[in-house]
Length: 249
Length: 217
Image: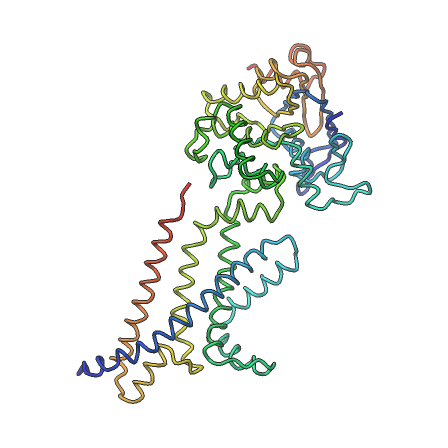
């Protein structure tokens, strides 16, 4: 198993958001996580690369526990940072570095984290921007790009770290409807290239077309998991049925 | 009331001597204030709690006590613990320490005003706390930090008038010396005011020039 999350619990103040959620991701797999808002999808995703520290449970990447050592103590920041660099993350609101060009947004990780030379990092950044069809926009600042273009730069930024998997947190939710397709197309190309991906998304067409497995979450736990056809056409759980019925209204 | 133009003419070069001292003291104090202030500001963003507490206590003290008292403390209290400073340097240090407290707070607030997603994105690609500060947060906070910092430096220049109380022969003290001899307080204080006003205006102009050259995004 490439990534394994077991019994992840997370509470904010007195409110428990995750009640022991578990997820397994195999190499090359595309997983789409669906569920009602407030079901803990985003929190689970953020716990996978420890942007949020889980209160309990473990996440492991190729058998290596993230964030804690064998006796459960928190790892030093340097070790956690290196682990995070192996997991890409694409944010709902892009979070591109506002002061840097598209090229430098993508190059900064390889240069500062992976230790590539400035030239090598920029060369890699060019290649990744080309991969998301933005070769002609390398010198633009985020504010000069459309939402769809910004999100593709963000995907290139994640790709440039050569991550072992990429997590997508509602990557199209902040986009104008006409810009959704260009981002979904890039994600489909990545799925076809067997990039391992976990995507929290409401794009059901993407889920149908690209997902190997769909995970339905509700009230802070995984309710059921299956192939897109199985989940969408023959959900086993009532809660899944109700959610899908709402979706088709 | 008779305005003594002859005295005004005679005083201009005398005051200019004091003004040069004011500029020297303020320049040196600005260097201390900006360097120490930036350092303390970064410390207040450190992951080490004791470092943050130290800065909080320091800023509280600077903000909570009058500059005049801080000047006296540096000038009169330091000799008690064996540090004897000439007035000039006592003045530089007092003004510098004072400005550093306020600039630390400006830097802390400036970095804190950067949207949370910027640091999260940096963490997601594996950057460490220090790298995030240097490569992501500080460059973006420049625009928020420069205007209040120049404000603080203007306050420093005006505050330097208080150094006359520890006999630093700066602009205000030079004027007081003339007044003591010729007893023409109105003319001289007006001249002193003009000197300060011109100095502060030049600083304000410099600040606007710098702000225009800061990148926008």
